[in-house]
Picture 1 (spheres, rainbow, N blue to C red):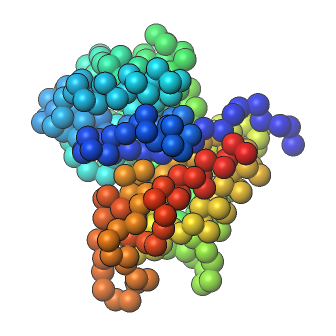
Picture 2 (picture 1 turned 120 degrees about the horizontal axis):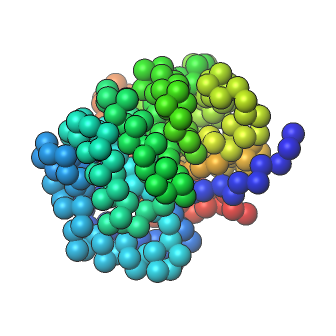
Length: 309
């Protein structure tokens, strides 16, 4: 197998709903993080105007000051649109021209070098793909990624929000740099299989799906396009992603030379005051600001960062 020349990228998501957690420079200096995915650029209350999580101005002074300081240290940023809820920018910009302008504004304000479309609901694919083609035509250095859901460790990516979207991207001529699979909120298909092992199986099945979309690409190239993004600690379906699972995912990423690693989210990479037990019939809602498992502060970050060692 030929060696992939692409350097792996580790870019955890940071949720921009709380400026108290928006410490890019501190994370860079203390934990060596050189890239982040900013979540999420959404519609400003139903307008074709980008904002952070539907309400915070895209050029919020506190956020922009921190972004500029991080970039001055050589940090790189990916702006993620969409996500698990809220008003998608893609659904409130009704033409290719409008959506292109909104994407350009987000990229310009943040200085981001990557645009990530996180798909967890229906969007007008022709409009989105047209806007992405326009962005790449104007600036070929902008990387484009699609963050897509997992169907399971015996299947790979979800069809409607994963495979079908990627088929549309290929048909429209979008240069897809990363297929970032959300390896979270699924149940393992075999008893006794660790979540880390299950995630590697999702990765393998996803590459098989990608091979049918881009048959001209080698397996090495496809793994170089693959991204894996788990959810730290307690998942919404009560599965747990633990430190040993993180180590297994990093080992797989090194072995296969995948292109991207992330996780949801650095806001959660710390221990809650009360750690949730393994599922015992009592449903526990994952905390947005901690992992619900026993851990040291930013322990998952430090494990994932070994991808470069």
